[in-house]
Image (cartoon, rainbow, N blue to C red):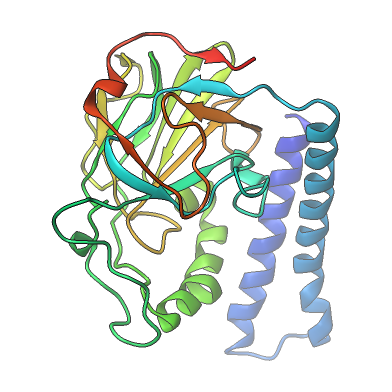
Length: 284
C-alpha cells in the first residue's frame, strides 16, 4: 500500500472517529474534555493540507499535459465548477478532482433549468431539471473499469435550507460513507496511455455498459442523474491517472470543438461531434 493510500485511509478513519464522537455526544457525556474530541478532525485536516500542498508543488513543477477527448454530452450545456477558472476546480485535489468539471443542461427550447431560491421550494423533483436523464457518451474508445448505478437519485437541494442541509449534515454522512457515496453512481473508463475518465452522479438503473466492456467513442454509457454528493442533476466529469479514486491524480482535459468552458459559459455539442473514433491524444 503506497503512502497516498495510507494517508487517505488515515484521514477517513479520523473523520469517522470525529463524527462518531459527535453522534454519541448527543446522548451521553463523553468521558474526556470536549475539546479533545476535535483532535481527530484536526488530524484529518492536517493530512488534507499536506496532501494539497504536495499536489500544488507537483503541478507547479511538473504540470501534466491536457488530454483531448470528445465531450461526454450533446446539446446545449453550461459549466458550473470548471478548471478554466481555478485549480483545483472543486476546491480540493482529493478523489482526483483537480481538473474536474460540472456541467448542467441549458436547452434552447422546452423546460428551463430551475433557478436556485432562498426559501421555497426547499427541494425539487429531479425531472424538473433538463439534465436529468440526459445521455452520457464515451469520450474516447476504451474499456469499462467500473460501473455502478444502485444508489438512489435524491431530490435537488434548490433552496438555502436545502444547501445548508447538504453541506452540514448530508455532506458529513457521505464523507463517512467513503468515496463512492460522494461521487454517487459512477463509470470509470480506461482510455489507455495511463488515462482514465470518470463520470459521476449517474442516474440509478441507467447503465448501458458493464465492467470489462469495450466501448467506442460516442457510445452510450448511461444517463445523467442526481446521486451522491450533488445539489441538482448534473454531469461531473474528470480525467485521472489511475482507476482508484482514492489514489489517482487529476489530469487536465480539453473537449474537441469546445475546449474547457468556464463557469457560466454556455456551449453546444452537435451529435456529429461524438462520431466514433477510437483515439485520444495529449495536447501539445
